[in-house]
Image 1 (cartoon, rainbow, N blue to C red):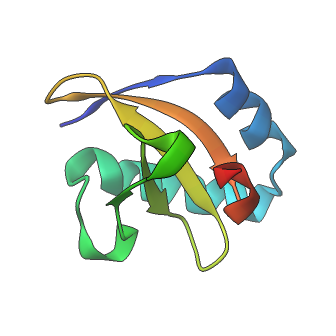
Image 2 (cartoon, rainbow, N blue to C red):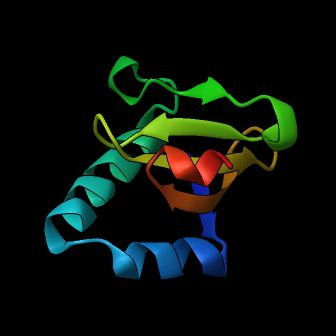
Image 3 (cartoon, one colour):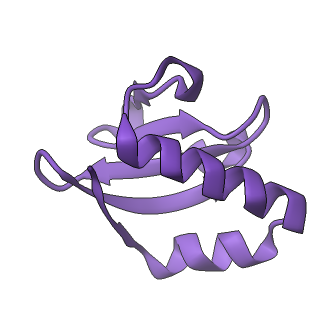
Length: 86
């Protein structure tokens, strides 16, 4: 199982989400902890200024950006729509 830690910016972003989206986030994070590369998460490497970071999908619009800190540890960095890539 993946060990998670959260950046303060991620927690701030999460507080801004609707209650329905927060539920989706909890479900996807739970799935991510079991299998970070589950097909429904669409986990992928980011390029450009976000090189070294990864992203997975919550739903069609929203994403979580994270960074691996070893084989079994991850830091969740940001949550939001595609504008978080900028």
